[in-house]
Length: 204
Image (tube, rainbow, N blue to C red; front, side):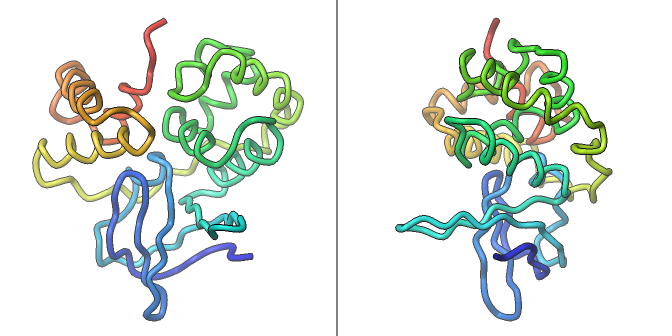
């Protein structure tokens, strides 16, 4: 089991990073909650990891905080019908503390606002996790992370946000239009994470 990687950040996109560790490049899938707090490429970084092994692939998932990784594992190992892809979408759509609050409040509407999470899945999350999240120490609010270096211009942020949505299954044209609309509402200072989260919220 690979529990963490420490190395040089070579490339960072909204859905994955490339980390060089002693001359070996590792592709690591990450949620937006991690992406938006990454340092600039070339800097050293420590990522907590989860290795998913299948017959056809070994996939690494990376997180800046133990709270993010704990929630990812809880979702994948506990909630029936939730795999790594949906778990990453949940982490991209809701901060850890917001997710925990929604589960404890049985707020199905908030949970089902995440792309890929329907009402039935949201109800299943509440039923299967509400008792496991009763202990406040289980999923603490994420500690402030290192801020990501500002992107070079608004277009770069919009492109990153569109790419993240496309990776989550949104058609490219729809992703582009959705990001543009979100940027018009949130303003020029909105981060990639904020843009994508706004796009992932489905109308009630």
